[in-house]
Length: 258
Image 1: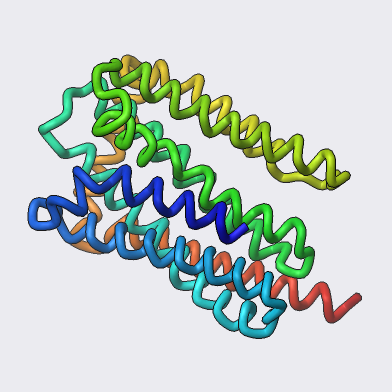
Image 2 (image 1 turned 90 degrees about the vertical axis):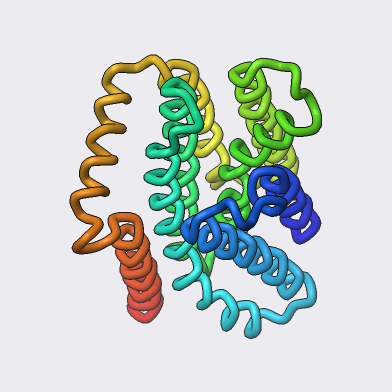
């Protein structure tokens, strides 16, 4: 598992190398916070997988508590990045709306899989799979950038994006077949595989959707109006922290009763 996480980490770093790591001075604070939190998240996943392999379960649980703070920062900063991207005049309206949908899918899938990982901490196989999903569902953005910058730059943007989603879907299928061989029946990958398929389909229409454009304007307006009171992205992050702690205590209470 730690090798899988490390490979995912390399894909993310490679994908954002041209637009972020090689142009640090051109990016705003929101990008730096999100980038740092994402890097720390992957390092957390890698270290946790190594600790489990080495049967250092107590240290695994102690370090795992850091996710209560780190995951909300990833989520909160991602919401802020969406606002920054929506107000970026460098992209045309079609791609602004398209990536707005891509980002929504990634954030919601990441948050949901993390919350379920917290809820099922004591069910090791489920917990491990939910944590693995947090690394998998965020791959469309870096993969599309990696393909555009290095692998197939001459291919149209939407074609690249479709290939990226197909690659992620293929990874899900491979994992599902592997789990089937292991006779693992309670498999969360089925739900997230279907979710990715749905998001993939919607992404192809988001750029030309009037309803999605109106929602984008509403998102920008709400974010701008609330900026002097509270950053909506960070509010989402803090709510995520509270919900994760609640799930952890709920899990603890149910174990005490049993």
